[in-house]
Length: 76
Image 1 (spheres, rainbow, N blue to C red):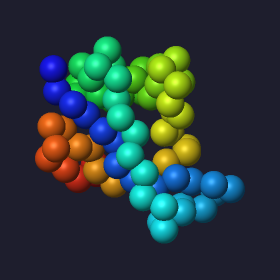
Image 2: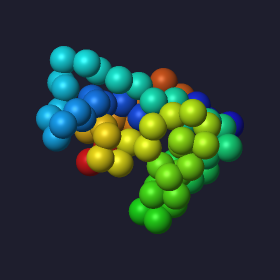
Image 3: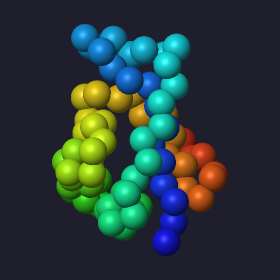
Image 4: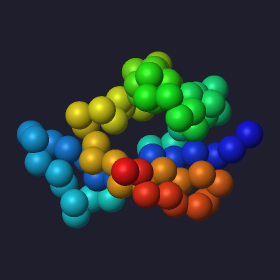
């Protein structure tokens, strides 16, 4: 199974805190959704992250990269 992390910066009060780089590990159970090319799967994965004790990055994080097995790829 791949190790996947979301890399970016937190958003607080509508501002990107670019001085605070953050990493959000993706639980193994959600990796297939994270790596899917289907936008609906990405949304499902994000919505399930709080069930694993992590924040939903949508609206809470400015994502810059997706790290897969230690290799960073530009997110957009």
